[in-house]
Length: 447
Image (tube, rainbow, N blue to C red):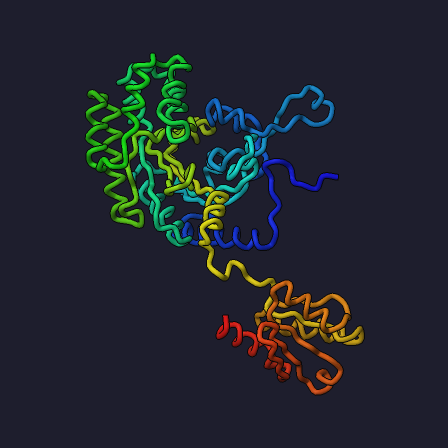
């Protein structure tokens, strides 16, 4: 029988889980320091909740769940696995609006599923780490979100990254100026969002294939969007204003970009935000500023997001301002592992000490000793059966457990415990109530 997990899915062994928990812990701690509250939603949503929210390509990647029982014979789906955490948040805001504060700030770390083709760094099941603010149109929201994301990456050890920034209305202004009809903007943005993946020729070809522009206009449009890193932020903003050709909403969007950059300079994202006209982000629900976190020598990004003031209104019937950013946990873990960025403590030993069992008659006392050590704050494993002491030592050493205790008849009678350090080979006999303090002290001093 095949024991591999399904394609695009993974098992996580203890060391993997410890690294994941470390990163998630840092993310949650930073978000809490910014005043965000935790939220969880079901893995399964009604299919109508998800469909039509992600654009043409996104909708194709939704994992559908067929109807059950007799209805399942039709091959129709009524449920789907969660595609992201943003649409479920919008549903929650609509459902519980009376119970939520005026400005609802939430973070959420849960798995999502996409019927994508598995490849390196791309999975069918993966975790997202979202932080969103609902209820305000103020650009302070964008600045705080980018500051929180920057703080997370700094805490994790990333020092060389940029936050790419653009605006959906600025994009619309440029597309209008290029002569693309407003009802085809979505198609153009899907193509332009691939600029860093397929290059200028690939994007130009897709614009032509989709019937948006002719080849000459496609090349001109790609040139307009492909601003190099050697151009200053102020010059990029001036180019955007110039290329709007008086487009009112587009020029207002450029003003918002300038203000977001100004506000982020006062916070943790200082010097990290870079206006990038080529950033499009394919999801159709974005309405304002959009952003993406770029790391040198990395295909793809470590996260992204933007403002989506109309998404909640799809469920509620009225517009509710909203903005958020999502960090890609899986990609962060891959990069940190490949670059050796995890601190030593994330490769923690499974226990601080293992209690050996001298013989069957000593089993109850061994369990009693383990309980005493746990109450004193140690992580304690108990060897599950009476065996040769040498075999028990070997087992503890193979698992990376540094200390073992020996509690034989003589030690029990005298009220002492022998403690052996498997790293140094040193063995000491200590009063029973001094064992925990001894192990704790040695761990602290010797690492």
